[in-house]
Amino acid sequence: QVQLVESGGGLVQSGGSLRVSCAASGNIFSIDVMGWYRQAPGKQRESVAMISTGGAPNYADAVKGRFTISRGNAKNMVDLQMNSLKAEDTALYYCHAKVRVSWVDVPRDYWGQGTQVTVSS
Image 1 (cartoon, one colour):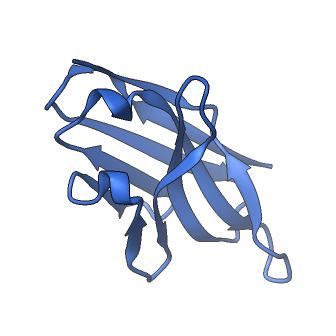
Image 2 (image 1 turned 60 degrees about the horizontal axis):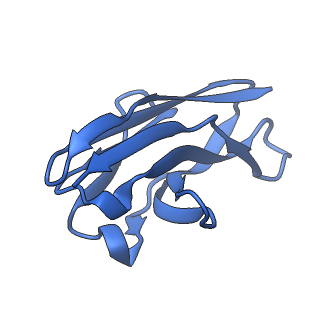
């Protein structure tokens, strides 16, 4: 079993900053990709940012220049620093990871429970 646990998030005024973090634990051999998705009420879940092990980060156009994704000091962690937040960034933010549980395994998708980010205008 693999668990992803998010922390951070909360309520902030427009233009403010928040940081969300995610820690993966359990039967992990390796993590190929970690990232963040978000889902606003009435909308589909969308990719926000992702970073592969040893690779460059990728960002959705809507957050480029404002959000920064990084792998934490511990290799099974990922952080998302969100600056210049806008009301339209309000959503439930989900941590995602592609994890191998053994060297012969294919990478499988795992999700956290989500953490709420609310930006007041």
